[in-house]
Length: 128
Image (cartoon, rainbow, N blue to C red; front, side, top):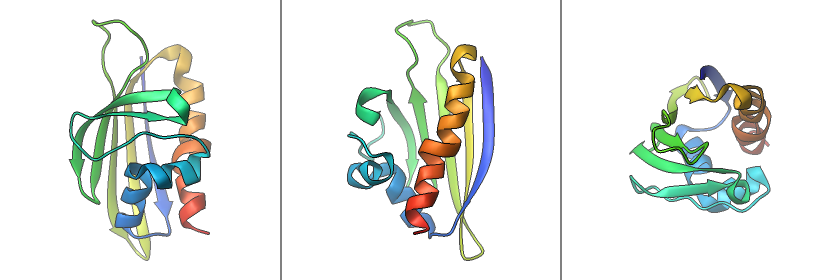
């Protein structure tokens, strides 16, 4: 298992970044695919038509999103946890991403996905 930590600077207000991460309509704009998401703790979500699925563990409006991502069916599997912290920085926002317990075989694809298809895509959408 591996961990990944990165920072993203986005020229948008924290509430806009948070909305892009939690509103299914906005998620579909930047992902280009069907999304199921709500802001209830314990609710399950699905992105890219089910390619990414998991559960929302902690939500602090406009500041923090903590999720468990599912990578397999194993009940004794170590949870893969995604934490995104958002704060105002200059004329925009900074997002601190910390993704823990990524399966070794998925690590390169997950990192590329964060940088290009997930937070990279959020950045592109919000900075238009």
